[in-house]
Length: 303
Image (cartoon, rainbow, N blue to C red; front, side, top):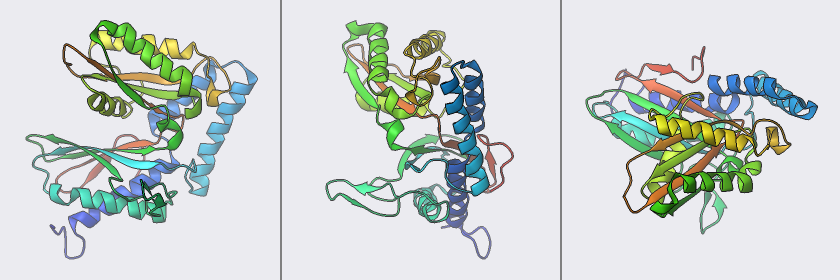
């Protein structure tokens, strides 16, 4: 455990900074989500849809003014890590992130959302076996740390689904799978939704990709032209369902559709869907080797 100065260790510094960042994420939406909600409100014409969007905006204003989480369900905290192989504090990172969740639970505060399976008791700390969820990517020849921090709430997690299709199902099969999930469960996830789709070989690879797709900024596109075209086709298709804000009907059902993909086995098509609710609480923070940080998801923030 390396010491930054005579009093503060690197682990303590990461814990303190990320703990405060988690608290911020629970109260203030990332810039791209806030901007997209304003755009969607302008596209709606029905009075009820307008009222629902206005209540969303009022809710966010009050969360900041009252210094409280914007939704009572602050989720299970998930970390998606891109850690440089040369980041000097890589050995302390997992413990520091776990402790940051405990700090945020006390200080933000966060609702207690970690229930030990089979024993069926709530730990009261948002820490348990495998929680917080930490997903690692190691980046060669880098000494930086990038964190995507996500609050996986119950409603937005509920539609999550993954399966393996026969290759003969093709991209039509992927489309049918996504639309079936949205028509069956989308209304439960507090629309308008951000929809993440993963396409790979197996259920687990597709599932992780579909969640990583939710970390992308709204308005970004898959670099593959065909995949980007499918993002737009799926967005149009889900919007045509007419879920509207909070499932009360409207012109738009989603904030966007993001597809992440890898190469696949020729005999399978793994596909998965994950969703983010209208209160899509995620944040992106970058640390350098000296633990100076930059927040890219929320402008004008100092922790």
